[in-house]
Structure formats: C-alpha cells, structure tokens
Image (cartoon, rainbow, N blue to C red; front, side, top):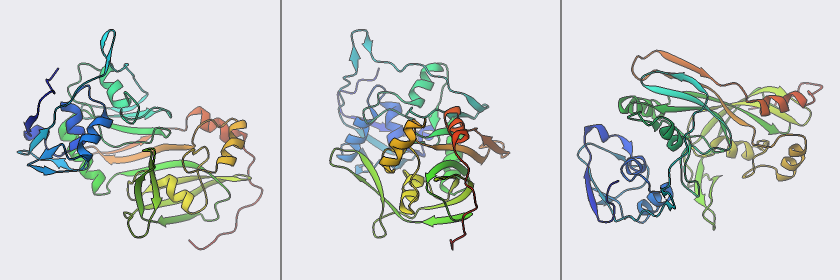
Length: 321
C-alpha cells in the first residue's frame, strides 16, 4: 500500500490522462473512502498545477497533482477492510467493455456512507483484471444497464461519446397519474444543492440550473398511473426523477422526490422499490465502431407489479406538448 501520510506530487502520464480527478484519486489512493476524496477536493487540498479544481476536472498528461496527507482508518481486527466480490448478470462483454444488469439497491461506487459499490466489488471478483472503470452512473435505487470499461482507451472514447450525445439511453418509469401526451419533451434546467444534513438534492432552477432535457413517451396507461419511456438528451443527476415531479408525475416508489402517500399505498400492493429501470442503451463500440444495441428486461419485481395493475378503460385525451 502507498504511504499517504505525507504530501505527494503525482505527474500524470499518457495512460492516466483524460479521466476525472475524483476517479484518478480513487485509483491512486486505494482504501480511502470516496467521501474523503470529495472532501479534500472541496476544501482545495488537492491542487492540479498549483490550482484548485473540482471533481469534474479531467487530468491531462503532464499535469502535476498535489495530494495532501491522508490517514487510512478503514481497519478491522483482521486487517484492512476489503470489498466483497460481486458478479452481476452480464448483458455483453468483450475485450473493451462489460455491460451488466445492475439490481436496485446497490450503489455504483463507494462513498456517502457506503463502503463499497458495484465497481469496487466487481474488481474484487476479478482480481486479475488490469483495468475496470465506470463509464457512467446509475442511482442506487435504479436498476438496469451499466457500462464498465476494461481498457483506458475504451473509457476515453465512451466518455467522449457521452459528452457529445452519441449514446442513446432509454429508461422505463411508472409514474403517478394519467400521462396525457403520446410524447412530451421536458426542457427544464436543473441545479444540484446539499440539504442541511449533507444529502444531495436536485431542483428545477431557471436562473442557476444547467440545461437539461428529457423526452417522455407513453407506453401503457393504467387506472391511476402510466408506464413511460424516458430518453435522456442530457445526463444530469436525478434528471428523470426531477423532470417528472416538475410536470406533476412523480415516479412510483421514489422516496426522495415522490408522492409519499401514494408510495405507501403502492408498497402495500407489492411495489417495494422505485420503478425506474435503464432498459436500453445504444452505443458505437469504442474500438470497432460497430453499433451495440444493449437491452435489459424489466426485473421480476417490476414486471410482476405491472401484471397486477388494472388497465385504463379509455385512452386519455391529447394535450399540447
């Protein structure tokens, strides 16, 4: 294990370039909780080329990264705490990437009170893998398709495709109420903020929010709820959840932004989680250029709940989008 008790300067080489500083530090400071990585970034203790940076900064070859002294306190009687190995259902795998079907209830990475997430546990399950990094993220309570790069060259290409909007992601969500449009595009800027207790939240904010757009399509209407598909034009934190609340259709089981009275009602009927699933992902393979069309079916706890619902008796009237 590296000695992190003193100030360290790291020179980024060619293989280490074009990745977020938080991910770069997580790889270098093994055993340090992600929450601590974010804290030293927020307080300016990490410097790149003698300047403060935030967690979204992408290190470049030749950058000099200053890492402050860090004490590793994750110890048990048996020694350093290790992630429990975890293998998930694999939708696709080749030499460049893995696409897995993540269950709800598992975070994609450690931090914010969670010791280990999907990526740490996947690395533990594949100790011989030289490189495994998340390409994107899913909320802890969201299930479905998650991409992991097995090569840095693949990660760079996939990140660029994400930034340029060349990756098509489609989610399925069950929402409260009858959705009146066959299709509706929601363009509402989003702003992240922290609650007093440190919990991260997102709200629509026309003045300070970042541009955010989602296209919703009605799939099936039930007596008091609607199954929608959601296609992301941008990839903001909690985007689908907040956009749906903004237009009056909160997601079933959403314990952060949802209709809490309705959540209690549907929990008694068998829905014990948030009904949001990353169902489809279309992306060009980062090395071959071949289009990958990845699909993850609804998990049984969601498809089974839909089967219990009473279909709507009539088609809702259309309203202007």
